[in-house]
Amino acid sequence: MVTVAYVQLSGCCGCLISLSDTYEKLIDILNSIDLVYCQTLADAREIPNADIIMVEGAVCLDDHHAMEVAKEVREKGKILVALGACSAIGGITRFCKGGQMPKPVQGSFSALSEVVKCDLAVPGCPPSPELIVNVIIAVLNGDMEYLSPFAKYAESTSTSCGCDLITNVINKSLCMGCGVCTSSCPTRAIEMIEGRPLVSSELCIKCGVCSFQCPRIELPKGVCQLDEE
Ligand code: SF4
Ligand code: SF4
Image 1 (cartoon, rainbow, N blue to C red):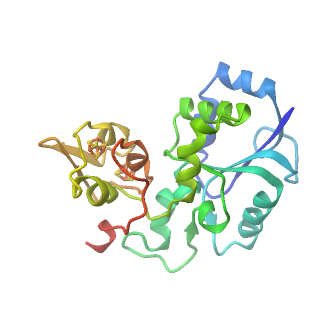
Image 2 (image 1 turned 45 degrees about the horizontal axis):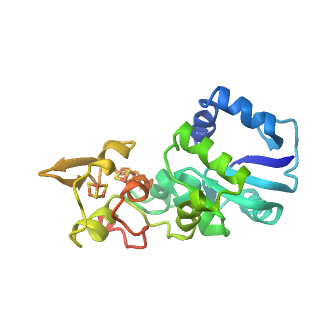
């Protein structure tokens, strides 16, 4: 049976809540895996070796324990999944490393994928229950075709934000005005103006979902323009 560990770092537990919102599908998944570690669901104190380790939350760079856990999950997981925006690309925790004024002087956070190599990254703040289930099923089935965008996302930089649409889609005349970015943004930071997305720097939490969902974008590599305003 496939062994799975679920590790929580600095986050809000929203990804775990989203996972639990899958209801009966979660029961099916739990019946087909061996959940060997989960702070809230399994009685285990040490992270064991596992076929799949899913990590929710960002890594606090000033926290020695968090840094050790980041290394540990990479060493112990055959497949390491950065689940949700904080773990995948930093998400809202990027504001704690100077992503937006005011810049705090204490503790800063990074995406897990910035600290250690992740095999898959799942966008979303939190990822939808359906997306989490689909990814888990694809991993269990070894469906690499379905997983390939998530593998690519794990290799992208953690500078993703709404402005990537401007840089990589609109300015290249690639936008077809489908509106997917608008409907996928969890903070409603994107408004469609005359058929083109307009991103609010005040509302963007840099989760990267819009870039992941846009059918016309290469996954983000760019510099954040909103930070330079
Ligand atoms: S515009 Fe919305 S979906 Fe895109 S990165 Fe910002 S918060 Fe996320
Ligand atoms: S998802 Fe991409 S193509 Fe569609 S409106 Fe947004 S930027 Fe344009």
